[in-house]
Image 1: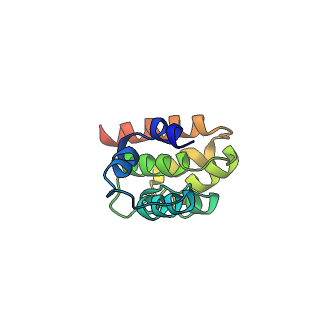
Image 2: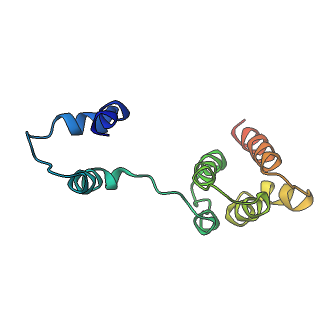
Length: 126
């Protein structure tokens, strides 16, 4: 098992292990505890549906920046329905033209939502 660990680690984890002082760890439990203590602050937690519903376009935030930020938030959520994503986006957007477009169309899929939002953002920037 110890030999497998050496081949399984790479990057920062491999560097951390090989830069430990000699004989600092005496058991698998100690290894686990030290590993977690060293890397837990760098772990990116998955988002939740509630996190997405709390995203709002800032007062001075461009439409494109909000779309990117919302997309990043959406990408951290492993299991969320298209309907929930669309509702969260509609609640968070402040761009009046896009709000009107969203209210007059029956968007069913996130792909449609982002296509419409991206096209609207391109028009704003032009």
